[in-house]
Length: 308
Image (tube, rainbow, N blue to C red):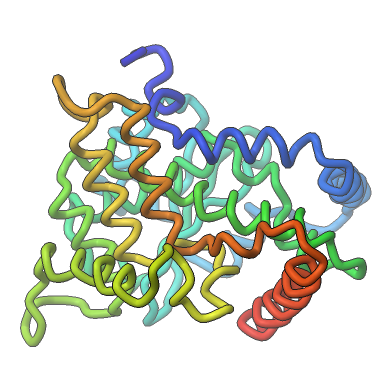
């Protein structure tokens, strides 16, 4: 692996390809220019001011352990930007990395996540969020495009959803690369999916969790055909699929000498991700186009409802 750019080496190929294609799309360029103009004209407080007023900044003296995790992730991913960590009160497990402002990168954690996750699990979460930063995923304003006054073309909307899922694969790899502990990474994703804090009632079983992928495949002859319509337009892959993709990543040369090569890794990951990409949505017939437009309109409506 090229140690000068470890993060770039582990990035998912389909994330990078779709990212570059979307940046060149006229509609994406138009929206990005509008956002840039709005930010230039903005007179109100920025991200940092908002975080300082709505959450608690965690200094190194307040949480040395968390800052040591951040140091490790920055070193592993080759990030030189200064970092500020925040926590806010919430019962849900959540974390977010904000678009850099004034040379700073901001990561925010919910209080419940910091209390319930182990050190290795937190390393994965932090590395995942920093992965979004290092891969510049904030450059694609997916929310603005999908929820704008003008609905995007069906082909663009489908590409945006597909890219978002592959972007999560890249961020997951960044997190796993920081944690270097597949069982802890899988357990973190299990906690995020289930909301469970410990193993008092439910004991995590990696093989059983991955078995959900096999059951998904059993629902249809082709990947994705058994999934409900709204699942095809999710911005995040199903949690079992994310773990499945990470187990392949963990067996690759990117994580261990003598592992499977990157080409095989990407082929296997694309097969797994195919569960969320029904083939007929790419059909060229008029009927396929009509169904595609209908599904895209419905998917955006679902996304709007989820955010409401």
